[in-house]
Image 1 (cartoon, helix red, strand yellow):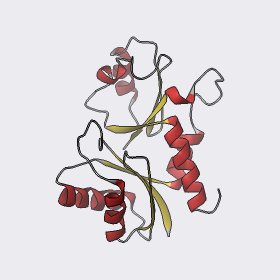
Image 2 (cartoon, rainbow, N blue to C red):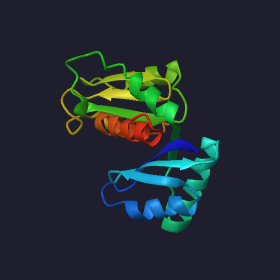
Image 3 (tube, helix red, strand yellow):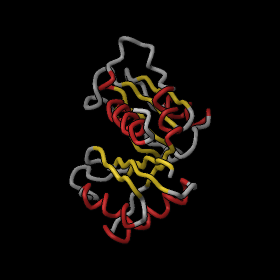
Length: 183
């Protein structure tokens, strides 16, 4: 069986699109997934499957969520390699002055083009530092996320993603390594 990580976009935020993690685990198990574990209340799920097509897995889960809970939530399904690459390619890792609690990773379905990255930077003039690597956008908020205007500014139609803070990314990586027997 292969280990996967799924990240649901926009659930349990401000009382909207509410899914209890126990119900989410039950839904995954009903789809035939094994060793289902959740992390936090934001729709982070580590699970195993015999299926090999991450896009097909995402479509199945999205359709089941919509049928059971009555709303659509875009889903990002990552392989172990995908998640480890996002963790290991952190462009801020070597900077000792970067506080990991102020680092956000936005997971994307596809890498951003240089044009979109330029548009993104043109809409922003704050102290935040934005770096794109593969299918991940790393955003460092030196003054904290709560004070930043970047969330409004970064909404470009070409960017559809789901964000996780660095501590969550690290915890997911640790869960995945344990699930594949390396942790």
